[in-house]
Amino acid sequence: MSEPTAAIIVAAGRSERMAGADKLWAPLAGRPLLAHTLAAFDGCDAIDHVVLVVASDNLERGRILAAAFAKVRDVVAGGEARQDSVGAGLDALEDVAWVAVHDGARPLVTPALIERGLEAARGTGAACCATPVPDTVKETDDGIAIARTLDRARLRLAQTPQVFRYDLLAEAHRRAEGVATDDAALVEALGVEVRLFEGSPRNLKVTTQDDLAIAEALLKTP
Image 1 (cartoon, one colour):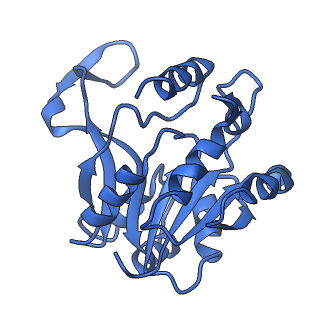
Image 2: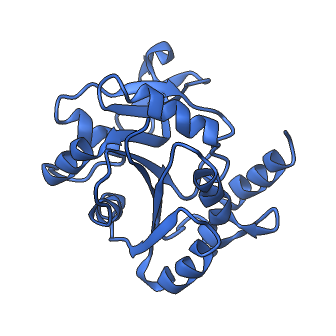
Image 3: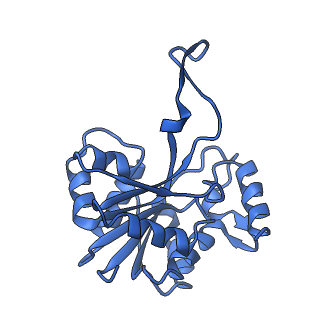
C-alpha cells in the first residue's frame, strides 16, 4: 500500500494473570517483551507511523523505549478498556489511510504477517488475522455439562494485527455500543465484511508466565 499507513500498538493492559509482573516489560531474550513487538512494526516497510498506547503510569517508560524506534512517533495513555486504548491511538493519528491494530503482548509478530494483513484488507477495507481451531470445541450453558459440540471447521481463533481503513475503524469506534473484545467485532457491527488472513501459532499472546517461557523458546527457534 502506498497510502499512509500507521500501526497502533495496544500495551495498556494490567497483566492480571502474570502473578504481579507486568508482561509488557518482562525480560524476553534480553530486552523488554514490548521491544520485540515494536521492532517488528519499525522494521516493516509498509508501516509509516507507530502509536504506542500504554497505561498512564507507564508513559515515561514507554517514551524511553520508543526512542529506540524511528517510526514510533507518539506514546499516549490508554483507557480502562482495550476499546478505549485503541480510541486513544486513533485520536493521535492524522492524515492516515490505513491502520493496523496489534496487541503489544504478541511479540512474535513479523513484518511479513503485517504486510499480509495490509494486502488482505484491500478488498473490503477490513481484515483480521486468524488461525484454524486445532481442538474439538464444546459449548456449555452452565460450565458443567456439554450443551453441544461445535463444528471447528467453521471456527477461527482471532489474533492481531487487524487492519482497517482509518475512516472505517474510526466510525466503528464512534458508533460502538457496549464493549467489544477486538476491533473486528466493532467493524462487523457496521455490516462491513471483515476478511480473514492466515495467522501463525507462533504469534501467541503472552498472558501467563508459561506463555512467556514459550515465547522465549520460540525466539530461539528459527
